[in-house]
Image (cartoon, rainbow, N blue to C red; front, side, top):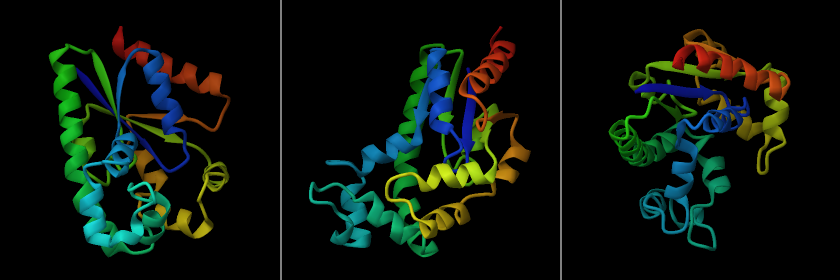
Length: 197
């Protein structure tokens, strides 16, 4: 089974690219969705995070308020480290279950969609790494159009990640997502066709 790591910077088109893999019937482990579930109503991480950061990070529904938590951790490396120590082992458990299930089913390829692939060391589990890449001005424009995003928060997020240029340098395949969507899809599918045939 070929394990492909999918990463990039914030707002570089990872989610769109993950959907393109799914179009080819390739299973994708979505680390962001996993974290959403862990932080959501009844999520496994909710009690641990509220114990570490206080009840002010809880929303009215009992889930973690991601914006409130994000504003805090992206401006404080110590808080971010505490959060990562809670979340990373839980995400790793889900990821291992995903990989084991697809190995058992004799999948030809799976994708690990992980924003912090290199930062968390998850690239060591991968046979190949795809990095989504766009010019910085497009990345900033896309990111700042998101709900709850501010210039300060974006700066904090970018500072917490390996620079995109370094991820590009470490990639096995760089996918240009700043172009027409059809062109991007064709680039990816041509690469997959070379690998899987």
